[in-house]
Length: 286
Ligand code: AMP
Ligand code: MN
Ligand code: MN
Ligand code: MN
Image 1 (tube, rainbow, N blue to C red):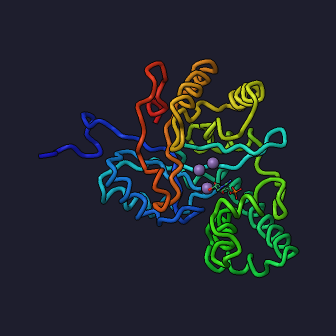
Image 2: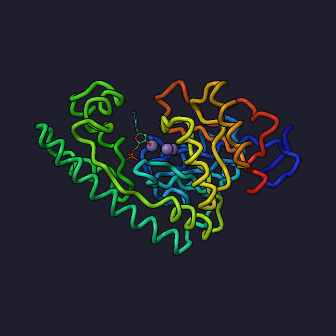
């Protein structure tokens, strides 16, 4: 018999501190996501939708029912030195005014970017993308993933990857260069709302070693305290490399799947190896 509950300190926790719901570009509703996490044995989950906290109320109701801990989170899009970086905020207060003012700015940026992407697609004879996406997305955050979905539905491409490779990725015809929040602002909003700032998937930016080090210095300088050492797609070498960076820059280590959809059979909520021994787990701060 298992008498352990979410509040039981004896329970061995299984964390997943990065995933997406329909509030941004995930396929599952916040409740479906929480239920799936519970099925996978996750005991502490952070929902971190792109630039929105809209899914958190529903997720926390579902988490109470499923007896798992929900850590309120967000993944904020930032621009530093003309490059885009994602900063995860963990344990944020979704009602914080500074955070919400920041989210509002990002919502405006996202919606005007979406119109421009649609214009660029129209120039390539793909019309109606913006209207179709807004109709489905409602008040949820529109991402490039929604455009990839649209291109797939219209049978203009056969996979999401092809949508990025042919139209949406940097250097492709429908790419729109965007100025997101500054790294300093994003970390400030997270801190002001009581949260901790974590640099998401540090190896996915395809930076040289020296750029990566510059980025981590700037992130620390801005008040960031953690980096993701394990993400859903990390190889063994990636984990060793990221853990090394965490130690070198005195940053806490986070683990997050970056789960978006059950249709990606290679990536599941909460499916990770253990953190390397020398890492300081970020959950000691949560
Ligand atoms: P955005 O923040 O609007 O630029 O959208 C980024 C989202 O699009 C990411 O969170 C991924 O879900 C998805 N994405 C970005 N690049 C790719 C890619 N090359 N292939 C597939 N999905 C991608
Ligand atoms: Mn995404
Ligand atoms: Mn990301
Ligand atoms: Mn993500």
